[in-house]
Length: 322
Length: 159
Image: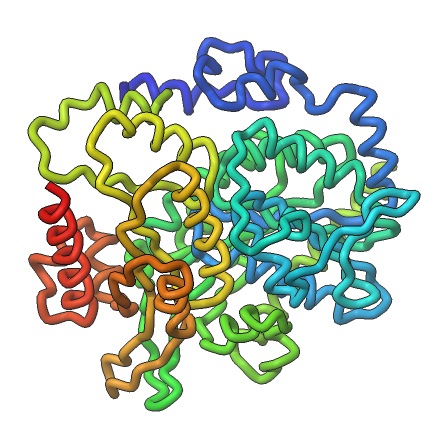
């Protein structure tokens, strides 16, 4: 069985290929139906709809992690806050973690509902220039569980892209659930109707997390999703009392730095642990605003700047081609 | 299909306990796992959270999943609950404190205990070593053994 499994993972023809969903290796893959239904993504009519809706979105960044619990949603929320600090920029944060939608709470929007307007679903706004959408806003109770299989989750993701009236957006940040599953495949395929600048992958320094990041990098390469870079979270802790540093999540195999060197991927930065991060998130506040002097804030800001630079360069290159 | 195969086609032999580690969420894998294990003696589910409200928020939904699936809830574990600096012994609640315990109280399920952040635990997991055998003096050891004991007691009462 192990031989069969590793063979089929290695032999995934790639979701964009003509063989997608049809190759022998596709048998039993949970995404077989999705791939076979449309090798290049949504059908032409749907693709046109999505393109029209997302036409006014300048940059799209996907935030991925191989593993749960590495701080991906925290990072997505802070990336959105960081970009929106520039009031001239319009930022949108889309939470497609259907089973565990933490973004509403982190953005201080718990209990908010989605309103429908003539032009579609309205995002919920944190600031004038920062709008959010999440399945969390569609649930009436904090105890409600979304116990859906893949195809139903994919359907909601498509709706989020098609029916939300984002308006003119400079940056669309998409927060994903951990792993490489239905949601990831569908978001990449639906967004192929427009474009994605790239993906940011969040990890902790441990090998058990990096193992999953390597798979995530593989996924990105298979679906031709550019990788903006990797963020190493929970990278050391400085005791507030004695100021000594501890590696709570030890980088036993060289951490993200070594992995990035080996795989020729950018390391965007390392963020240390800071108890204030969790506190700010729990209260729906921006950690960057509440703790501007923290070393973690400095790291986040540097990382956000590098992401912005990547997106702007990418845009310039595209314009050159046109 | 793979999950069902893992349950029915693996030659586990005579087992006292089968521990099933699941991915985060309430989706295909969870539904399939419960369905595949239903014919067997399901003792119940342990829910792991970190102390922060954001994590607890997701675990509330997981609790609903367990109830809908008819899964007995053995209890809640509050993981990464505090870090004791090895240099000066100051305890810092890096990921807050108390959320797991509060959730257990609110939901009327047993609270199994807090497990602190422990670099020795992380290290031994990275190296594939048996933490319980090798680090009996570390900070996570009493918490983990206490939790294991409660599960043993529960299983004895059930049989």
